[in-house]
Length: 173
Image 1 (cartoon, rainbow, N blue to C red):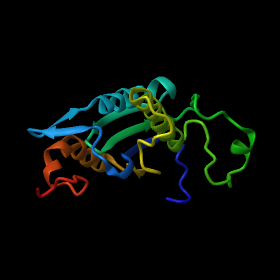
Image 2 (image 1 turned 90 degrees about the vertical axis):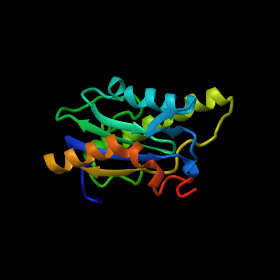
Image 3 (image 1 turned 90 degrees about the horizontal axis):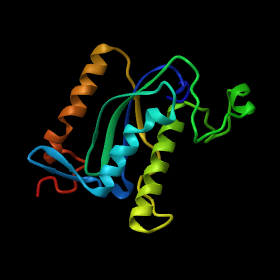
């Protein structure tokens, strides 16, 4: 939503996809996700988000072969974080320039997560500058308890529906 303040306290559903939707994070076997080494790094980086963003909490999440779904809770209080320094113009100018982020904003959290994963994966592969993630991400503001319950069920059941998932490049084969 263009006018929504993504630093607002609340629960957010996030989906992040790998570059080219390549299945580098693992595979689904017997309706369970088996993570690759890269997928294990992604899992570790996701779980570490609260260590880098004070007050941020994680709810259900799942690392799938070529994407991640997760629920992030942003707290009421201002949050410090490491990836984006607080700049006066960000605080004073609501019409920030495109790409400018405020500490604790959902985009700062996702960008930091993607960056941390990419750096660790490039170190593992002994490469540099290789992209792990596609640009951007999908987000949904959780509106009420029913919405939350539906999203939690979707995340938990995602591996079960992988064989039919449109993101599965092996679907129907």
